[in-house]
Length: 498
Image 1: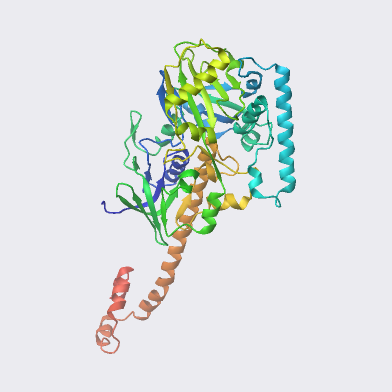
Image 2 (image 1 turned 180 degrees about the vertical axis):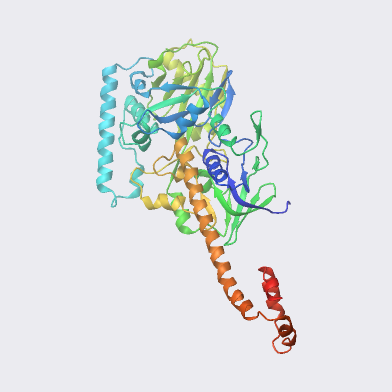
C-alpha cells in the first residue's frame, strides 16, 4: 500500500464536469490537486470508438442548444477547437415512419398523429402542473400520453425519449437556441476535453503526461472528517486531501461502487434516489453497401411497432461520414437493458429483421455491429440523469450540496441543464467556484484562530520585557514555565521572550 499523498483537492472522475472543475481550480492557483479516473482515458460518457473506418460517439454525440441569443459554452469550445459538426433536424423524422410492411405512413396521417400526441402531452403536463404539490410524486413519471397504435407508440417515443422542444420548454433550447449539431470529427467529441486540459496539465503530442492525472484508479472508499478526506482506490492506494470533488454519475452514486465513512446523511441519500437514471443506447451497424434513402430530409427514419421503443429511431451516417454505409438505431431504458443482457449476434438478428420489414428481404446483412453497454458499465450505471418535470427544487439542492469536505458535481447537479454535456461542463465550473469560496473562508477562519491565540502571548511577552540584569536576578522570583517557551517558539516568538 502506498503512503497517503496529501493534496489540496482530489477530483474523482475525468469527465467533462471533472475536467472543467479542475481547470477552474488551476486558473485560481490550486496546483496541488489530483484527478483520479476509473477508466483508461478521460471523457466519461463522452467516448469515441473506431467503427467501420470512422469515429463514432458511443455516448454524447450532439451539441444541443445552438443558434439562440446566448451562446452555448460547449458550442463555443467546439468552434474554437475547429470541431467538425453537422446540423441535425429531427422534425423530418415524423414524415419517414415505416410500418411493418415497409410502407411509409402518408404525411397527413403522420402529422395528425403527431399533433394529437403533442396536444395530449401538453394537456397532461398542465394537469400535472395544476396538481403539483398534492399529486402522488410517482405519477410524475408516467408518460404524458397513452398511445395505443404502432404509429402513436412510435411518435410518443420520439417526443419523450428525444426530449422534443414542442412538448415542454426545455431550458437548453430556451437559453441557447433550438438547433442541434452532430459531432462528426475523427478526433471525437473528447477532443474538446483534451484541448481544455492542455491549459493546465502537461501534454505532449496529444497525450496527457502530467502525474496529476491518474488513470485506471477506481475509487472505492471516501473516509471523511472535519480535517480532510482519505480516498482509497481498488488497487489499494490511499490518497489524502483537504477536499474532494466527486463527479461520479448519478447511477454510480446510487450503486455501491463508492462507500462513504461515515455514511452519507439521510437527506443526501434520499435526494439521490429520487433522481431517475436514463439509459440511451446507440447501436451501430456497418453494411457493404447503401440500401436506404439518403439526403438531409431522410437522415432520420422511424419504425412503427406494437412494442414501444422496439428498434424505433434510426439514423444514417451519410451526412456525417459520406460513403460510410453505417446505420444507427437508438434504444432507451427497458429495451436498452434487455439488449445489453443478450449477445450482439442476437441484437444483430433483431435489427436485421426490422430493417428487412422496412426495406425488403433482399437487403444485405450487416458486416459489423457495435453495441455500447452503459447500464452494465460499473463506472457509469446509465447514460444521464432525468428529473421529474415538476421537481421539488430542494431535491436538486440536496443532490448538489456538499457533505463536509466532499463536494458533488456532474450533469445531475445542474437543475436547468441536467442530461446535457453543457450541463456537466457548467456544473464543474459552479462546483469549483463554491469550493474556492469555502477554501477562502477556511483560510480566514485559520487566520482569525491564530490571531486569537497570538494576542494573549503578545500581551504576555510585553509584560516580560526586562533588562538582562533584571531578567537574571528575577529568575528566582518569576520562573517562566517550559510550556510557554515551547508554545512561543512554535509561533516564532522565542526571540521576544529571551
